[in-house]
Image (cartoon, rainbow, N blue to C red):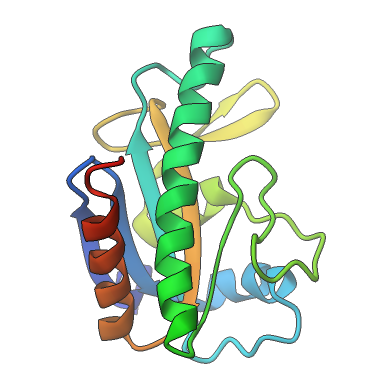
Length: 175
């Protein structure tokens, strides 16, 4: 049974172009997630990777690249916060990762950093490439013009989909 067997919802796209998918946490990803959320049982843990298409190649340096990263960071944070707040309000466990630090935003009991590049490789089979001392994700359509970020939830798939749909509807005019 390959990693694709862990995909519960294939890649979807919001009206503003953020791609997301929903996966059961695969075995080879569990140690990373356990370190990220110590004491949280991983049974039923869902991983929700997202990707946004950047207007510039994010491997490059400079003011334009930094501005683009800030724009995409703010968009993801607003969306992820809305999704997680909706899930938590329903009594579910949820969290999202700050893409700048790799640290969880809600459950902050760790110093473990989440590897977005490794996650996209494991969950979606995206290729990676070395860029200096870093590994980067190569999106199948956008190459290195991609901004990855992740959310996590312990909730039924239907609740996660509903929370995402509600967040998309609530944010559609502001994002």
